[in-house]
Image 1 (cartoon, rainbow, N blue to C red):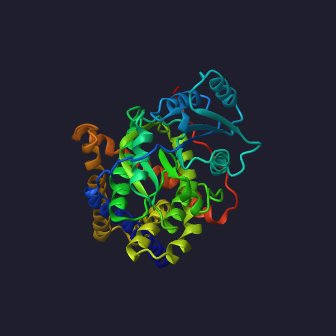
Image 2 (image 1 turned 180 degrees about the vertical axis):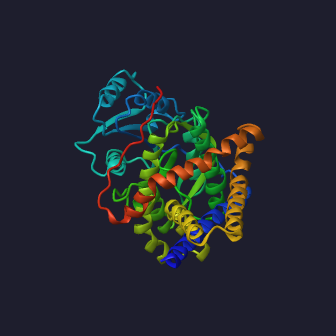
Image 3 (image 1 turned 90 degrees about the vertical axis):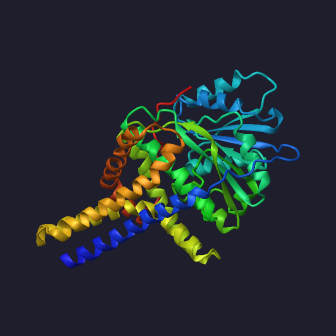
Length: 410
């Protein structure tokens, strides 16, 4: 029995090593990232800006005001509040729209009878009501700089095979507490190391569900929005790449949003993402291996889709290590293995997170060290809290889309 535990723990450890090494490789490759050209020639196209809402009373008015402040001709911009709310959000949205002066962009308040398909269903419904060739997506807590649409649209105009232009985002409450500082460090590394590394290598990098401008033709070529996973963004990305499209990453301008500021709300967000990634992996892995991508791109995409499996793998590897030591006695070999694993993980964590921290001028080395400590604490909590849901995700039926609670800002 112990031998079986050791084999399972060893396999889990090898998978963790592959995940960490892949991120280190991407961070090294990201050094070559260059902002895509932003040249716009010809007439400005019509843009549909979609803002999905579900009980966002604290954010809805600010979201609409931010959308109206974007630098785009009013006659070529349609704003949709895709409102599935069951609280006072709908009344606040309707009142805000009624107060708008004449002559601005068209603002549609889209209400559905139910939440069928959740966010994916709302986005698909909105597309039926406007035929704009470009579709921007912003979650309710996101605030974009006025130049965002012009820069993103120019990127798509310069690359006819670009399905979407994904912008980096950062947290307006990133300094609120140790949790939000850790999340900011993590999201900085996600964009400047992982996403940029995939972009440089020509590999699939994910649309993050918000803060992006999509080409309608690419969404339709990929088969449209699908509600059968909780990671509709990753699912659409995979299908778009399989259909011959690609993404473009913009590290500037950054969009401002809100990070969950306590463990309970953060766990809600991460549990949805974990489940969604596993669902997309189950659905999309055959598509990856049937594609004509090069082998390295297929393997890299598999590691991306399997990212959330790192949580139960951490639990299995740590459990096997402790079980082996308990039954056989902790020896020098155990100490060496533990120290080697910690040293490698620490080296990779610093190599992946320190360059983005310095590039974005988040502070000095002392501040960086204090922030870095939050990462292992958050990961251990997440592994213990969400591993069971990751393992069970492929075997469950329909999952409820649980909104991440936010404090909001007007």
